[in-house]
Picture 1 (tube, rainbow over the protein chains, first blue to last red):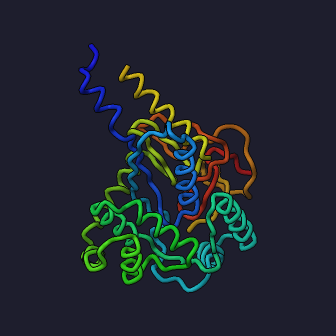
Picture 2: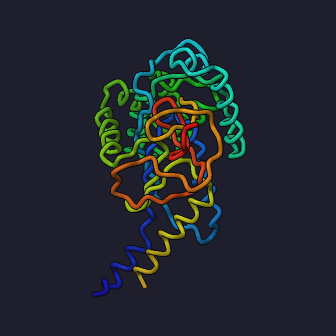
Length: 232
Length: 57
């Protein structure tokens, strides 16, 4: 039996939900973010309204907050990866990032633990500023060489994202959002998400990796079309 | 931050190469309908980034 007209109106007027599991220290997550944005923009006037929510995923929980050395030092010496291969890969990801309009600077990058940054993202979500903060944090980490593991610097970044610095500091120092971070990570595990970025559309379709913009556009068109079909 | 390296399902790594075919999702036991997307879409796991489903060399 068809749903009543009010239900149809609700379906088509509600933004398409996009849940994204990512880590600030994930170079392909920032690129994937840009590709998603480009995919949405490519739909022009046909682009559906979307609601994006970021979820925490800590790629390397054993990373120290303070690491003295470059990114190559960390991956080559701390992790034992071949230095020449690390150099080659960083050059490659820098090139792909440039194509996405991002200016990665691995020489300036401050390798750090991202747990507190994730707590701040949850605080920002509670304040309706999560998207703004995610952009500020990615840019701070990959292009500006900022330290996203220390509370003082995170408070500065919170202010840049339009958040109240004092309240942000209290949220970080109290660890009020630590459980939410762990809940996201546990949810990823329950969903079988092993790598990031991972995108979930409408709680229905999963898309793994930094897909090209056209893939995101196609998925949104598909989801939007299914909604239209349900409302017809 | 992670480095990009191809890995097979068992975690063996190799130098990055292009791989034909659709990318496999970096999720198992997922409640979602996993869309294949484009080949070569990178994901990061731990300290490595890789193309899911790519065979190690």
